[in-house]
Each structure stands twice: as structure tokens, then as C-alpha cells.
Length: 143
Image (cartoon, rainbow, N blue to C red; front, side, top):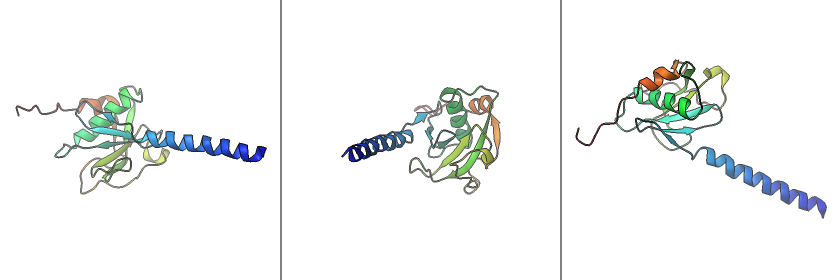
């Protein structure tokens, strides 16, 4: 009887952990240029371009997320670890993946090449500060 009780406790704990891990991909961050960023895992995050967006939107989202959510200093490098394509955390067509480590040092990245030349190439990098400075203001409704 005691063994069944322990199995129930372990199943309940496992179910709770699985539910919590599912929440990671649903927590989105919105960068100052309006792009959404979703964590893939502890190392990799995905930046979703807006329709008719600019390639710089990917870097803006990556730099903003790395700075504000991960606490990375402006001098830290941010790397493209997956070129633009279908998202893995959200079903969007234009998502690129980034990390604060080079592609060879992270797990869980797609490592796919840029889709049709759109977005960053795997291994491309810049500093967090430079990426944040690539942010262009959102167009106003008067434009």
C-alpha cells in the first residue's frame, strides 16, 4: 500500500513539473518595436517578426530580450542559432532563434539556415547593445 502512495506522489509531482514546463513557452516578451519573444529553453529564445517587418526587427527583439529579461550587459554577444522559419514555441511563420552562446554551445536550437535569405544566418552575432540600438520605432497610425 505504501508503494502505491509513493507512486501517486511521484506522478502528481511529475504532472506538476510538466505543467510548469509548458508555461515557459507561453510566456511572451514584447520588445519596444512590437516583436514577440518566446523562450525555447533556458539558453535559446525565439524572436517573431511582424508581418511586413524589417530584418533588424529580429536583432532588436533579441537585444531587448537579452537585456531586459536575461540581464545581459550591452557588451555581451548575442548569436543567431536558428534562421528565420516556422516557430517552435508559437505557430508563426517568421521566427529566428537566438542565444547568448554560440550555436555549438547551446542545445535545443533549430540551427536551420535563413529562410529565403530572410533574417539572420546561424552563427551571426552582434553585441546586446548594438542589437538594441537597431530598434526602429513602431509606425504611428498617422503614417
